[in-house]
Image: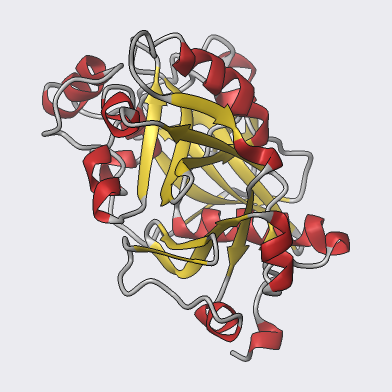
Length: 307
C-alpha cells in the first residue's frame, strides 16, 4: 500500500491530554493505575485503566513518557472528571496534574514512512518511546502499524504531522475503525463505571500488572482474575446500518446481552466493539438490559488476539 492509499492521519481532536509532572509522578501513578508505571522510566509507553475503589473503569489511558512529564491520552470529555478525581489522591505527593491540551496535541499516524519522512523516526519496538524536537512517538498498543504522536501544535504542523483541519472527522473515523479492528477498547462518559478491566480485555492487552502491588480498584480486579470466571468480554461485531451509539444496550440473536463501547459506520453497516455476556444464559446485570435493542443480522468478527 502506498502512502496515498493509507487511512487519514493527523490530529485526533477527540482526545485530550493529561500531564503528570513532579518527582513523585511515577510513584503516584503506580498507586492509581492498573499497569506498572515503573516501565515509563525505561522509556516505554503504557496502556492502563484508572478505576474506582469498586474496580469499575473510570478511564482508559495511553501513557507516554514525554520530556515535559508523563502524558495520558484519553477522550477529551473525560479529561476534567479524571483530573479532578486523581487530584483527590495527591495529598502530600510532589506531583502536578494538569490539562495539557493547550500546550500539547495528540495525533495519530498510520505508517512509519510518514514519521521517517518528517525526520522524527519510529520506535525500535512495539513498546519503546522516542522523542525528537519535543515530538514524542510510540506504537499503539497491540497495533504496531499505528503510532501515537504527541507534541506542541506548531511543531506537529512544521513536521507535516498535523493533518488538514478539514479532514478531522475522517481522521477520527479512521482511528476509531482501526481501534475496533485491533480490539482496543475505549471508555467514554456514557460507559464510565460500566465495566471491570477484564471485561474490556485489558488482561489480554498488557493493560494490567498482577504483580505490581496495591492500587485503587486492585482488590476487585485481582479477585476477578484469580477467583472467578470472567462472564463478560469485549467482542468485535458487524451490525446492520442503523442509529447505533456508544453505551447503547443490545441483544444478539443467540441471546447474549451487553453494551456497545465503540462504533464506526462502514459501507452498508457498522463495525463495533461491545462488552457481551460470554454465555447466552447469563444475562447482563445492567439495570436497563431488558430494554436492549435486538441486533438482527449481527455478525461476530474475529479479534487479532484470543479470548
